[in-house]
Length: 224
Image (cartoon, rainbow, N blue to C red; front, side, top):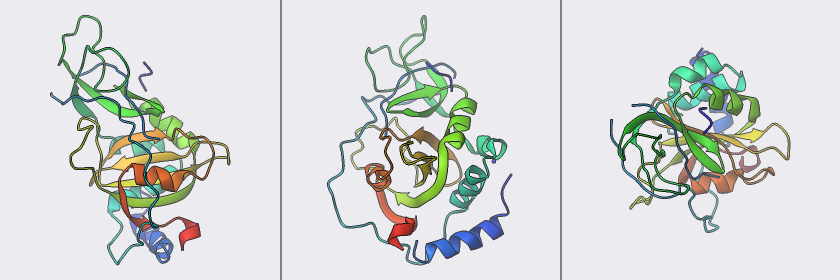
């Protein structure tokens, strides 16, 4: 198992993003170790979304500060300002075989042993006890900003152990064949960081829909 924020002047960045606002795949899970409780489930890979009309553009709602903060730190490749924003989860491990679900228990640990972990990965998701390498990989793979959107968890939620967050920020890959990079955010923290499963560019909007996107804070440039 791979045991994988200098705020850029929020005033300046927010002004920049306000201009952008004018117009404007997820994984399964593996295991690790660390220490308080959590649910269980199967695989964090939702079904492909049914094509629908384009997500609405912002309607005057302010961009959350955490979104501006993450965009500034990621575009400037400042891992030292991203890492303090990472929120670890306290998740009880499972001894069930196969991919998916909570972290797998380490040898000798009983079912339900609580690990302090962070969800990340690509295609095959994983829970890591140290987010430093996954965040470094995400920053290295992040190209230009694609979009930022509000997300809403499904109800009922088939994967309650997998943090859903309130917003997602998606960056294109560094090349047209490189995977997109995305960060799922709570009100003030990064709760997940991933490289998208699909390699070719062009699947970012589908990714946002799969993650529960309901409206853009910053729409893709082609949607302005």
